[in-house]
Image (cartoon, rainbow, N blue to C red; front, side, top):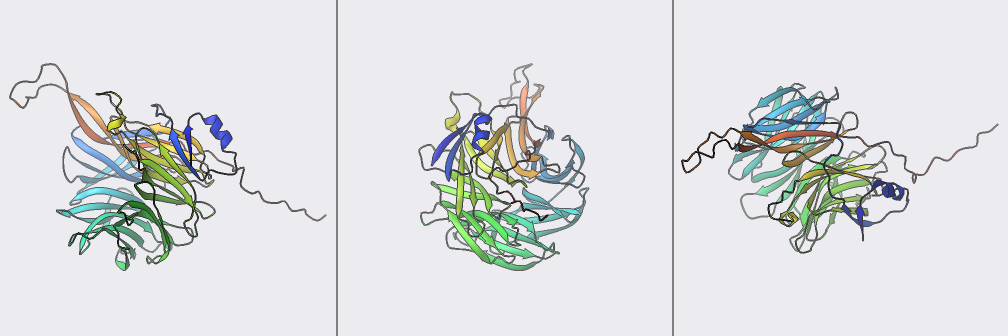
Length: 449
C-alpha cells in the first residue's frame, strides 16, 4: 500500500495519464481551506426553529425538490417540509405537513410525475417504522403508506424504482425487540399501490444492516451495508440481488477494526464504484473515507483508496458521470485530538473529491458553512452540478434583556448568542468532460475504392 499527499493539481494531472494504477493507496488530503467555488448556495430558516434538509432530487424545470424537517428549538418530532429551490438557491415555494413521529428524512425520488419521500418515524419507545409519502410537484400529498415490522423496529431503509416502472423495491435494517438477537436485513418487492408482494430476510447469523439499494444496468439491484464477522467487527458488505431478493453474489470486505459500505454507482463497463468508511486499528484512530472499484460479476476488488486527514472522514455521497469520472463527498468532523490548543475552534466541513476511473485524484475542494456543516445527501443537479443537501448551525445575537438562572439581571448591553440549525443546499461545479487516454480507441477500417 502506498501513501500519497494530495496537494497541487498539476502533478496530479500528469499522474492521471498513467494507464496502470495503484491497487491500494492512502490519500492524505491537503488541509481544508475556506473559499472553494460554488455555483450557488442557500441557507434557509430562522432563529426560533431547527431546520434540516434531508434529501433532494432534480425537477424537470431544472430546480431542486427538497425534503426536510422543521420544528421549534428542541422539538422531538418536527414537521415535514417540502421546498422547491431555484437555480440561485432561493425558495420558490414551500409546504409543511405533520407526519406523526417524524424522526429522519432518508431519501426523495422522482416517481412518475410525482415525488416520493422515504422517512423513518418513531411510533413508540424504541419502535420505529418506515413511512413513504407521495407528493405532487407543489407539495400536495397524493398518498402515504407506513411499513411496520411485527417483531421489531426498522432502523434504516432505502427504496428504488423497479426497472419495469411498476412498483418499488425496499431494503431495510431491522432490530428485533423480542430478544437480544442481532440486527438483520430484509428486502421487499412492492407493487404500484405499495403493497408487499414478496419479502426476503438476510440473516446470516451475525449482526448486519443494509444502507442503500440501487438498480444495476442488467435489471438487478446492488445493496450496500455491513455484516459483523466472527470477531464481532463490522465488515463492508456488497450484494447483487434480483427483484425478489434472490442473491446473485455477495462479498464481505474486512478493513481495520471496522468498516461499512454506504453508496454504490456503476461504471460504463459494468464494474462498480463503492463508497464507505473504514476505521484503522491504531491508537487514537481517525475514520477514513473508503472508495473501491470492484468487478461487476463477482465483487472482486480492482483498486481501493483511503481518504485521510487530521479529522474523522466519513464517506457520504458518490456519483459517476458518463465519462466514468468519480465524485466522492466526504463529511469531515473534528475529534478531541484535532484541537491543537485548548479553546481552539476547528470547524467541520464537507469535501468533494474527484477521481479518474483508475483512482487518481483530479481535484479536492472543501466547503464550509456557519459553525457546523453537515451534509445528508449528494445528488446530480439538472445541468450536471454536484449538489449537497444538509444542515448548518447559525449563531444569532439577541438583545440582553433576559434574566439569568439565579434571578439576577444579565450583564447590561452584552448581546446573548442563540443558535439554531438551518437548512443548507449548495451547488458545486459539474465535472468537465474527460477523454480517457487509456480507453481503447475504435480501430479504423480501410474502405474499398
